[in-house]
Amino acid sequence: MLLSLAQSRRVLFLGGKGGVGKTTLASAVALDAARSGRRVLVVSTDPAHNLGHLWERRIGDRVTRLADGADGGAVHGIEIDPDATTDQHLRDVGSTLKRLMPRPLHGEVDKHMDLSRRSPGTHEAAVLERMTELVERGRSEFDLVVLDTAPSGHTARLMALPEVMTAWTDGLLARREKSARLGAARRRLDLGTSVLGSAAPRDPLEQRDEEIRAILLRRRDRLVRLRETLTDRSVTSFAIVLAAERLPVLETIALHEELVRTGVDVGALVVNKRSPADRGGFLARRRAVEEEHLATLRSALPGVPCQEIPLGEEDVVGPAALARFARHLGPRDDQAAVTGRG
Image (cartoon, rainbow, N blue to C red):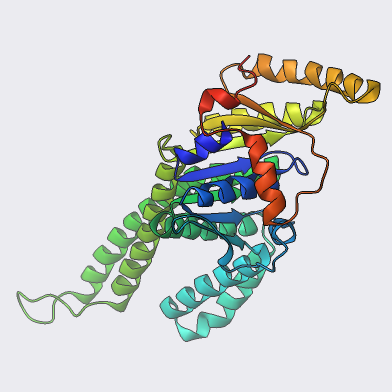
């Protein structure tokens, strides 16, 4: 089912509680897609990156080729560095502000940027900008973008940010429009006209205001495009990965509610590391406990397809192990991989 979901979308998010295997599943899906001839970009937004460890490659904050597929298919990966992303974001904003502000105020801009680095939400806003850039690049250069996201709470906030920041930018634009109209009227009264019937020279403040407005409009339009991508069910879907345990199940239900509220399609629940029922009494009892937790999950989310992945006997490290793990994901037929719909 997960493979079918990836096959029918251009953007696939994998999220859930930390430690449930999101990176492994994201990488396995990407490798399978590459072996079917697709060019895939895997993006890790989790500050505690595991992508490089899993592929046994140094990746970092640059697009890196990880594996070749068939018929031109390939897997590329990138790990977003939140600190470096924030620093670059603030440098860009500071440079723009200095260009628009008088030189005597440049020191104040530096102070403001330094305070912003420690302000709540700065990292999330910077990561959102970077994710927006990578989704846009991914859709133009790749067939599939797979996003391996941070644990649930961080991801829920990140997915809600485009809507919040678009509304904030719209409000800022409205205030700037009102301020610009009042400022222009005042300057016309102060300056008058130099020659009867001709307008006064162009005021530098008006030019600055127009440039600020253009910057805000570009940002708003980019956020709108991201929001449209995230909420387009034909383009984007979200798979929640979990373990068959009480806390991951409850966290999954809460994350599903948040994602649905923001308009994101939740296309699958993937229960990873499912205990076998035929390997002795201990594991059989463990599986029975897992069944109780999964009953809660199916009761709460009866309409979301649920796929189960068995507990493996080996660590999944490197392309060969990922290829073996991908076999557990089943065929690319939705119904063939479904183990419970509630």
